[in-house]
Image 1 (cartoon, rainbow, N blue to C red):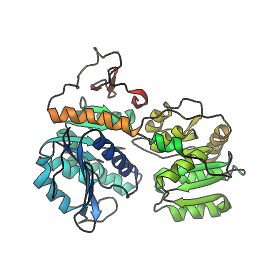
Image 2: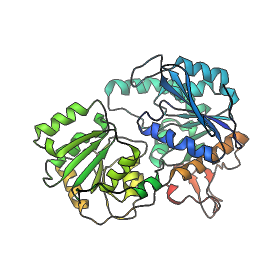
Image 3: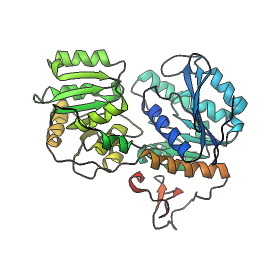
Image 4: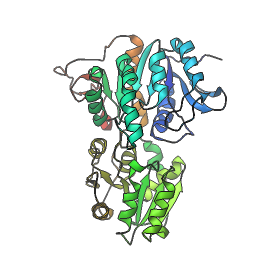
Length: 406
């Protein structure tokens, strides 16, 4: 296997999935890896799900290695082949960047990494499923090793950083907050689909119970002039379709399944209101993309959504209680559907990659030249900080944070 090198170092990015796999973590890794290559890093993406160990070609400094699954359970997928690779070759990378505390590959990386470990946990701390919640409590014992061994912990929101500091206090002082990005160029270039005017309500994401798409469907029953498009797949599809039928509104609810990135941008541009009523998230990516497209948004009142709501540059955001009734959600949708809105400047993946590269540079140098332990002498441009003001990344005027500052 040919070794690729980059002028700024060689990174292993360990992730449970990678495009064309679908999901928030998969999208994060799929956008970040090529953006890092453009900044001079060589990146090997180590992921799982292939039938055999395979390298999916080399594109510049980017290589994707897919390892066959040993355990195929949806939430606990595991690849012995990936673990063996990390044990044998982890030391050949300048740093190992592991994604998703809630999936086993990050734990494999933490126990195998022989050089600097960077952890992006995408941590939400709980599960809506009782069995999985019980397993989370047990998993915290080995899971703590990730935070103990990580040279840097990259959180995607203040809400996530605060939760980690509560649950894993040892990570305090090593946390950098770098939000997820959006593809601003793709969204800006997108054109709306014809025929919707201000009638379209949109939801985007996995059709899992904790996303509460059912409550949006119930709200639509009280909005007779509006229609709902549901983008995403998941185990809840049949239940949601039955709910729409039971309410007599199935003709106004369309399930689009997976759509291309270009079409997703067009749907954001077409929507009068984008709704996300999730019970927990580490970052409100759907809300950020909607704001970048100029859509109005209705969000559940969870910490990650409150962080993203602050990015709105107009008053086209409504936050409703996490357990809001269908009538309350409908009232929120109605209140912003006709409100004037404009695109908000949200962090772009190029900016996310630059900030992540700063963290890598720290780790590859083996010294915290950008790390600080106090914020008393912060430069004029400020620092990107954890909730306790343990400043990590220098955002001096030479490194402006712009919309990436949460």
